[in-house]
View 1 (cartoon, helix red, strand yellow):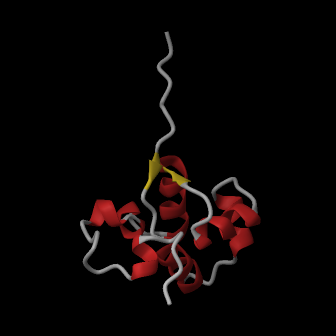
View 2 (cartoon, one colour):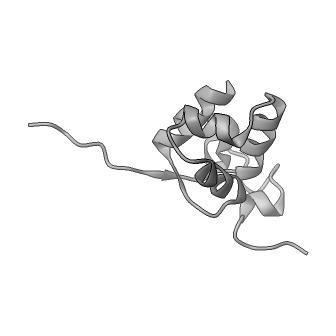
Amino acid sequence: MKRLIERQDTPFTHGRAQAAREERGMSQEELARFIYRTRVTVSDMERGRVRVSTQDLALIGAGLEKPITHFSAVLTGAEGGQLTPEERNPMRKVQ
């Protein structure tokens, strides 16, 4: 019997993904092709509009040549410390 891997969402600091993509000189379209998603989905990920699965996180890390810990506050232990208010809560606008 095959064992199915449950899709899990990971706390994702979207600002770091956009910065890493731009640092590599990669467009959203290029990253989208690499992670098998649309450019709109990459844009939504970068804006914090959609949750990022662990599978997508792994692909983003590979495509941008960064460890997955670079994109996740929980994995880096930075939660509440080094993150900006936008990274801690991307759905809330900071004034």
